[in-house]
Amino acid sequence: MAIRNTDHCRTYHDEINDDGLIFTGCNMGNAAQGPAGGRRRQVLVNGKRVKTIDVHAHCVVAEALALLGMKVADQRGPGIGDVGSRRIAEMDEQGIDIEALSINPTWYRAGRDVVAEVIRIQNDKLAEHCDNHPDRFVAFASVALQFPDLAVEQLVHGVKKLGLRGAAVGASVAGAEFSDPKFHPFWAKAEELGVLIFIHPQSTPQLEPRFRGNGWLSNTIGNPLDTTIALSHLIFEGTLDRFPGLKICSAHGGGYLPSYAPRSDQSLRVAPEMDTGVRLKKKPTEYLRQMYFDTLVFTDEALRHLAAEVGASQLVIGTDHPIPWQADSVNHILNAPGFSDAEKRAMLSETAAKLLGIPL
Image 1: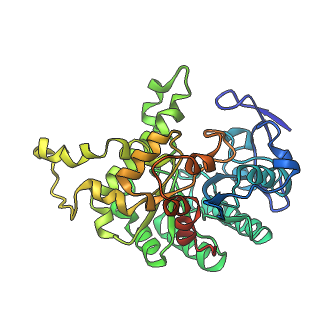
Image 2: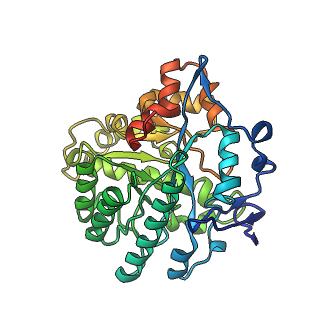
Image 3: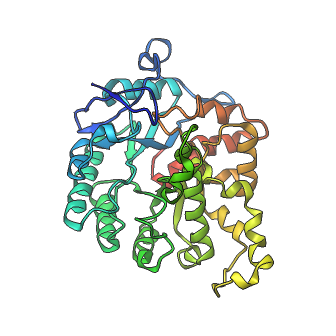
């Protein structure tokens, strides 16, 4: 069926695959045909085949949305096509061998009984889908962070029982920052399990009146700002000191924080009266080098600067599939000047493989 959504793309088409996942999204032309008659694009670095891994790709589960009183039409392009044909064909065309699927949180204000069922459905469907396509997909568990004890249970079940590779979270929880001590049990369990937490923003609703008008500013500006705030709190409130082994990956290159990171190092020197007494073990910028970031930053210069601030070893492909923010995420890395072959291999696959437990 076709769905009109003027907040994003002109027309959506959605289909439910055999696993119950829905991949809806923008019309992306002839991508369903695949390259050269449907053959998978083979990505090479200096003549050697590289298996590419995309950490940032979306889908939804209609049954779970219904429990929240939502419809697929309420979502803005969280996936695309039938996974057995169109979705995989587009991955083949892009040169993406494996996608790590995630579902953007829409459940942080739901009650405990409802959200427990929402998460059960979603994680079961994600696991089933990955089991049916083990060479093409892995997935992040959904978790109900508004109930941290429940989120811990869901993370453990998702990782240990369902084979999910970590968790996908928003950038705050119904207005609460991740640095709030009530979330410490969740971060502790994620650190103990050694799994990746993928942060995907949900805009900055407090600024919604200023985002009105042209330019889809709630996403264009609001999403990267949301991530910037989340990461800054994790740094300045000492959460990353408390959980130094925590593995965090942020969408959209970490928002604005890496672009202007040194300002964080100067803030409390310039305004010491704003110091709340939290004593960090390192400079704020140094924490960026223990986190991970996707490469959805559009230009060679942006990618070079991101790598200069956080290290190329901390970067992984993020396509935002199927939303066409970046035309060719693989070539963005392959053609970027100044990176060694080893750094390109790390960004294309090796770092993500280690984080997600994917054999190469």
